[in-house]
Image 1: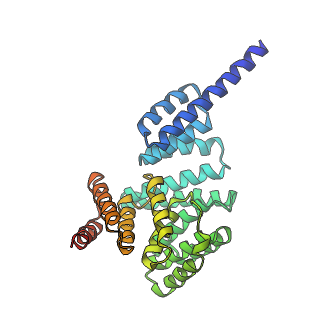
Image 2: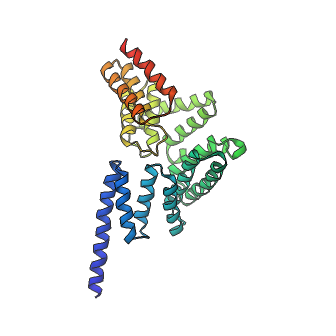
Image 3: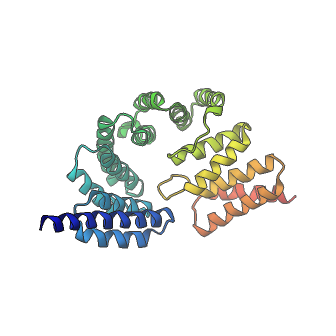
Length: 298
């Protein structure tokens, strides 16, 4: 009997492993609805499987179904309250939901999100994504509602100790948001000075966009800018704050600056097509794209 129990356990583990591979493939190809269906079916027979619950939460997050994502992440935190990743995912998703909520609900969601993000960092002080989330919250939240530039900069200092590129970009972001152009330019120059060391593919997709934007705005290392903007588009998910139409637009501008008119037109067409197909609400960017299109065609 013990032998058959062992065989059954091995079969169960193998079955879950093969299912997770299929789920990962579907999520990588942005086939979220089918992935959700398979995960929900698997969870019916494995209701406390943390890996499946996490993947279901991630799947809902990619679809911006914040309520269902939060339900799954709350389950994970209840199972393991001292897991840094679970606390980060719950905190980050609560903060994401706050952006879509009304002002009264938003503050409560943000404060609850901060609690879990801070705990995530307490459990793992090298959790860059959690630190970034807190930097954005403390920077963007008005001071009367709990925002704090000084706390954001403290987290940015911590981040710089872990990763130079993250730290410099986070400080540039803080000062730009606060309209302190003098300080922002100091960090732009520091980033340019260190640009040669920023050559890898970054898991945090925001950095790919930031490097590409920096290269275009400063007119330096343009090929590096093309590389990272292309990576941003390739790795884009709905969790990213900036839609790919902007990255396509920057690619078009870089190619135009390099006098590659064919590629500039191609990338601008991609930008406009993505904007229209996905019904992006950014009239300012659309006007810039159409004005640039007129310039290219002259």
